[in-house]
Image (cartoon, rainbow, N blue to C red; front, side, top):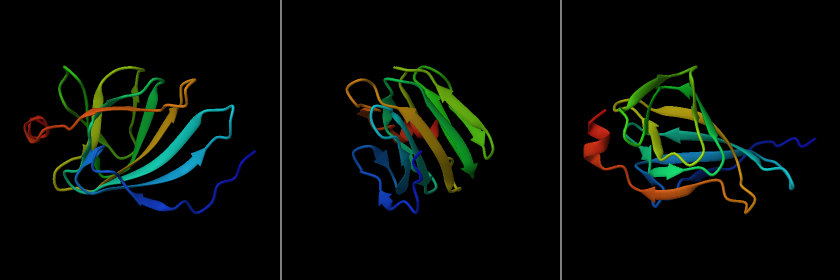
Length: 131
C-alpha cells in the first residue's frame, strides 16, 4: 500500500500544453506497477497538445466543461461528473471550453519502457475554435 499526501502543484510545460495549465501528480505507483494519476487544471481556452498514450487513458471531469477530440472526429463537450476513455495509440487532445475553468483527473499506465504519453503537435486555434 502507498499513501500519497499533499502533492506539489506544477505549471505544465508549454511544449505539451497551450494556455495556463497546472497539474498535481496524485499517485505514481511503485515499480513494477505502472499506474499514474494526475489532477490537471485548465484556464479557459487552455488545452493539451495532440498526443497518444501507449496504454489507455481515462479522464474524469471534476469541474467545468472539457472539450475532447480524437483525430478525425468532431470535438465533444464533457461535463463535470462525466468520464472519457481513450484507447491506446489514438491521437487526441483535451482542454477547457472557452470561458470556463476545467479540472480533470487523468489516469494512465506506463508501457514496458516507462512511457505514458507521446506528445505530437499543438492544437491550432482553428482546430480549437471548430469546437
